[in-house]
Length: 318
Image 1 (spheres, rainbow, N blue to C red):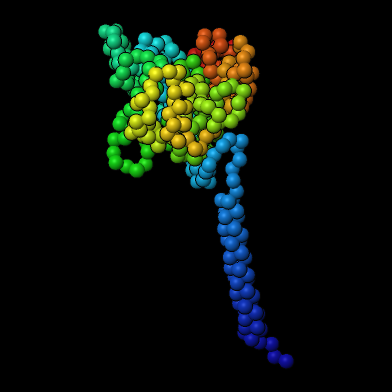
Image 2 (image 1 turned 90 degrees about the vertical axis):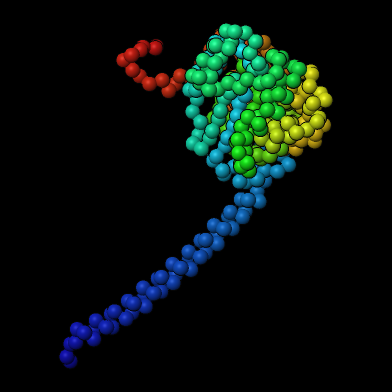
C-alpha cells in the first residue's frame, strides 16, 4: 500500500478544524451564561435593602457605590479665636480622606468688629482661604446657624449647574473632633437628599425622629440647606438653643424624612460621665466637649494621630 502524506494531512486537518469550532461555540455559550448570572446578581443586589440601624425612607444603591462625595464642614467659632483655628487646621489638615472625596473645612463667624480683626483675619484668609464671614452680629442662639445654612447656596452656587457644590453640609462646634474618614464611611450608604444626620437628643434615645440632633455636629443634604433659604418657617423662629431650633424647623417643614442617628459613634468626652458620654473607642466619628488641651491630647493620643510621622534627622520625638 502506497503511503500519501498529503491525504493523511487532510484527514488530520479537517477534524481539528471542526474541533476548534466546537470549542469556540462552547466558550460563547459559557460567556452568555456568565453574563446572565452577573446581570442577575446585580439585580439581586439592587433589591437588597440596606439596614444600618437608622430610619431611612430610601437608600439608593447608587449612593454606596459612587466614590465621589463632597462635604462642607462649617465650624462655628468667633473672630478672636486665632489659636483655636490654627490648632484645628493641624487637626484636619493632617487627616487623610479616600480618593474621590472632597471635604472642605471652613471657619464660620459673623461680621468683624475690631480693627485688629480686620488685619489678622484678612491675613488668615490670604494664607488659608478657609473662613466664611456671615453678614450678622455675633451670636450663638439668635440666628447665626440660620444665617450660615441659608447663605450657602448664594456663596457656592456660582453657576446654573444642576450638580450641587456639596452633597452634604455640616455645622460643627470648635470643641468637636471629627474623624473625617469615619464620617465618610458612615455617609457612603446614605441618601443624598432630605437627609438629617447626627447625635440624637435626648441622650438615652436611639430614635432619630424623637427630637433633634445635637449641636456638637449635625449634617444635612444640600437640598435642605437650599430649602432653609427659601422657607418662611425658620425666619419666624430664630431664637433659642440653635440645635433644638434647627430640629424644630425640620419638623415643621416636614423635612429630613431620611435620618441617621450616629450614636454612639458620636458622643461627649467621657469625663465627667453623663448620659451623653462614652468611652473613647475605635468606632468613633466625633468626640465633643474637648474644652481644654488635656482633653484634646488624650483624644488625639488614643487615636494615634501621629502614627504617620516620618523619621528624619531633623527631629527626635521619643
